[in-house]
Length: 319
Ligand code: ADP
Ligand code: F6P
Image (tube, rainbow, N blue to C red):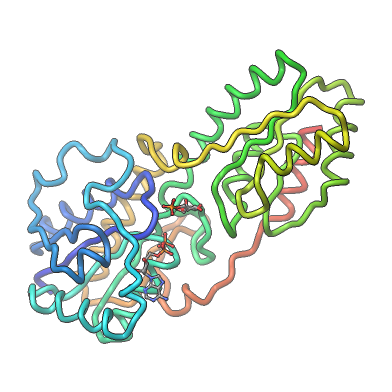
């Protein structure tokens, strides 16, 4: 293999730049020519290929977002779109592509593989919703961003004897809420995978008050309802003074943590090593602190299991 390409797709995540930098520099170090494809699959279909050199990726390891930019591209879900994607790659002499993104982006990479084009996926999404890997790029940074927000919100909640509902991202996966809730000492964590009804949430907050707490934090994953709605209903049932905060896209930005820079760098190098050895149709992940690769079709089929034990533990220690 002489020419490879790298693209970022779906929601951006801190650590994507570290991965791009590693792919470019390790690729060139390995004797390959590397293209960056701008704006994900949309840019791929439009032929937005940029030749990369060592200096193209200077000064980016510390930046959030993705310097290649990202996009959503419905056309890539169609047979015509997928064929055009392969044609574009071949027309540019590219023999293997590295896709950095989440589960949707991996479906695109899988489609490329099914069309006979070697592709390797690097998990990049703050949601941590890919079953085959313990961590995705951006998850650690996003958790730390949420913790910073919780700390600040707690200062004011404590001063006013209030409870705050803090809504975090995660449409189908409650990992951001679980880990940030655990680290931030949330009195209640509400996630889509493990239902808790309003009566139980109120009971928990009232019990917490009886144990001497004057304030509280409820961390809510967006997939389990809206902060305003939960706040309204809890206030009506308990009479507690409630406020709500939706953290929104600030969770997706920011300078990557050490962990995300490490993961981005080592997964980028790993992905290049696979392609350089002529190995495609894989995704790179980390399991029990060890990097590994998995078949892309198998990885896309795996269903993520929610860590109920950790959830229960977080509840017990926040009493
Ligand atoms: P993420 O990768 O963060 O999960 P999305 O779900 O928005 O983000 O997917 C990113 C892009 O991946 C989509 O805009 C589309 O181009 C591509 N994609 C998603 N699903 C599929 C699919 N089933 N087949 C092919 N490509 C897909
Ligand atoms: O990156 C994943 C994610 O952050 C989800 O948790 C969230 O619902 C979604 O992306 C929002 O993305 P956008 O605003 O870009 O559509």
